Length: 245
Length: 117
Image 1 (spheres, chains in turn purple, orange):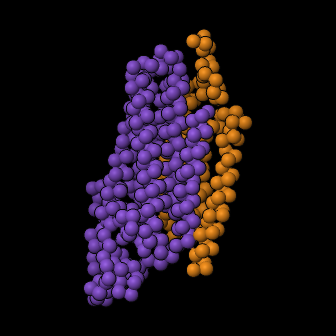
Image 2: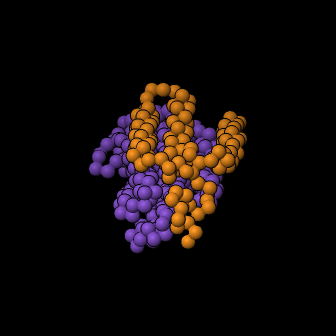
Image 3: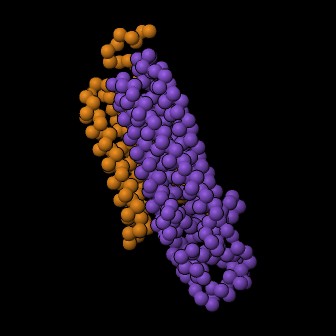
């Protein structure tokens, strides 16, 4: 029960972060980058595969939620080996997710080959790895393209070139807020996943030592399971409101 | 000590559901995998329609509804909230009315600030 009370407070924190994201996104809706245009990488695939990797990460987290609920299920039957087996798979899933997030952060921070330009007249123009020599302007999620000599002229006279992302500026849109929220929300969630993995490892050690078999019940596994499902639940919302919408 | 001889309710006093203890095991596993397939197909569907030629407003509402469906399955079946006692269920769920209110005022404010810009 107290795990539930904690989860409510945690859910309120995440709600506040996501609602702040929504409010500022509506405030700057004309210059906000389209997420489908930012997260386009997939390991070992050269080309534009928007959102595929985030979908894969979602799959990993849902899968690890399933293995966790199966561990809890084995706990109800007091099957120590079963609990240990499913817990190990859950921990593996957690590590895959954390690795994926590190990979995604890396690509987000490094950015594209040419980055973005602040043009002479102050406009913000992006480039595309797969359309070299072209410039793209974004307004209200509509994309306009400038190519050829005109693009070259604009680049030559540009005030500034921005590569990748940090807390002050980023090449994805003419506002630092997008990158700030990305780092904050996915970072906060990733830290929750990391904590969950650490807690799961501690519980696994206890299971392997037969602590819960001696105690006669696996309530501790169940509480950890609640936390782990909550992390999955938060990701469902982050996935929708950060990546899809 | 005290809960050594209890056949079923081996929980140590927390309000907890009896469902997971009483129902038979194959059914529980079936529910888990059914929930998994639903979550997976909804996610694939979401990514698929993200690039469909629909208006942005329509897409947004589809995403919101599907997200609430997914959240419902996770909370209800993975976290077993649907099988908790009535009072416990609503102690957990009712505070989120405040979140709905916060969404309303924060988004209205964002849209307004954008309009007067």
